[in-house]
Structure formats: C-alpha cells, structure tokens
Length: 215
Image (cartoon, rainbow, N blue to C red; front, top):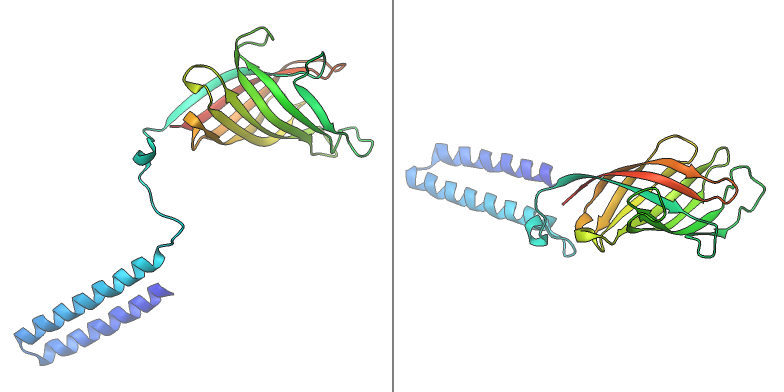
C-alpha cells in the first residue's frame, strides 16, 4: 500500500517540478529541485523507519562467530535396547487398542551412539528423545531425537532429527531440522538402515549416516 502511495507522490512531485521549470528562472528552478529532493528523502526515510520493529533487528553473522558453511558426513550406530537390567529404550505409552502396527505407542530413548555396530565400540554420544507409532496401516514411527555428542570438538553439540521412519524399509530418510553448539543453524538429512533386529526382545542396532550443512 505504501509503495502505491509513494508512486503517486512521485508522480505529483514530477508534475509540479515540470510546471515550475517552465515558469521559473534558473535560481527558482534550483530552489525548487532542492525542495523536491528534500521532500523525497524525508518521505523515503519515513517509509524505511516504518518497517523497523522493536522486537527484531538485522545482524551480521560474524557477530556470532559464524564463518564459512561446511558440509559434513557422520556415520554411527544407534543402539535401541529394551532387554537387560539397564535398557536404553522404555515404553511409556501402550497402544490404546489392539493394533498390528502398535499405533499410539510411545517409547522414550537414551540410546548409545557408537563408532561401530558392536555395543563395546567407542561411544560417540547418545540419541535422546522419543519415537511413537503414528500409522494405523503400516509400521511408521514419528522420530524426535537429539544426537548429543561427547567426543572431541563436538563434545556438547547436538543434531536434532524429526521425521517419519518406516522401520521395515531398507533405507529410511529423515530431516535434520537444527542443532546446537557447532551445529547451530544445521540443516540436512539422515539415512537409517537396520543392522540387526531381535524380534523377541525388540532390541535393534541401526546404522545412521548423517549429511549436514553447518558452520
């Protein structure tokens, strides 16, 4: 709306300027042009200031220490363990009805993330969050978890994953929606593929390949 008003204002100013230039002497023309330019500048300044808001301001990314964006690939193994004395996954909501897909069930996790598929492999961090069965016709999980790292320069940093996981597909893809620490402003995706699954205990080891853009 202000753009249209500004355009109309410009049209009127140009018209007045033209009329003045055909009737005035040279000093009068210069004075008129000066007044016109002053009015235009003042009006433009008002419009720009009108766009400012008290709760938001533009920032230079360098103020946050953000340098060149990088593209990284991380590979690790996610251990979802229900069995034993110290399980890393616990069911917190049972399915409210008899369902072949366990629709409505929710599990909370604190799953180890390791360098290799063996449980004794080097611990890289934990996958903390929950997953829920969100499909009535197939086994499709809603995954919401933070990959919290504890190794090297990534110690304390997290990658946040939120997406749909069809667990019986060979490869499942889910988005990376953010992160913290060295993964601020992170974006990308993960690919999950089952390494082992025990249908008796429900224990599973899943290979995760993470492709992420970050600073």
